[in-house]
Length: 250
Image 1 (tube, rainbow, N blue to C red):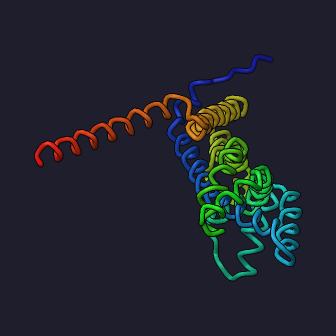
Image 2 (image 1 turned 30 degrees about the vertical axis):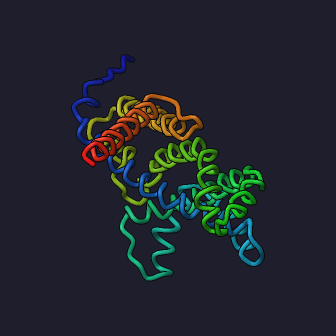
């Protein structure tokens, strides 16, 4: 039996894949921003005193064990009825990812915050900074540097987990693949194309987060850091020239 694979079909339907990829990235991008905020707040709550620490621990332990598919169905068909809110498929997808990955990111931030030496806090307070200002200006930036690589991995995981949202009707990569396969009956071709898209997205996101990691390094590394440093140097030189010009006029 000879099986014929028409690989040109994947390219011919690239517009559908492109739209699906945009949808997946939009859901994951909104979710990662909210998840980082939620994760940081939960991490602080877990490092605090009861009952907040108990509530945060319960949330983390529950949602770290919930699959993405169950979370999507629970939000779209359960939570929407419980709250009386008619979530769109986009909103349900974002909320499902936030509930899941907020728990994981909270653990990433908790480990990062605990890795900062206590002397950093004491030094900030000794300089006259308030506790909130010490946290925002001294502790949080250092913890974020530590957390960035793992947050990048979480973002890649979010993009991949959008594939389960086909169950609630999100027109993402897997949903488009299923629709195309129902028309052309070429599952190997279309699912191979979908796999390639996910791999390419993962490589691009990994490259971007590695760049961010280099920029945040001390001292900054990489092309982006060098470009930012060169721009800063030009601005300083321009400011010096203006000062010298004003001084010369006087």
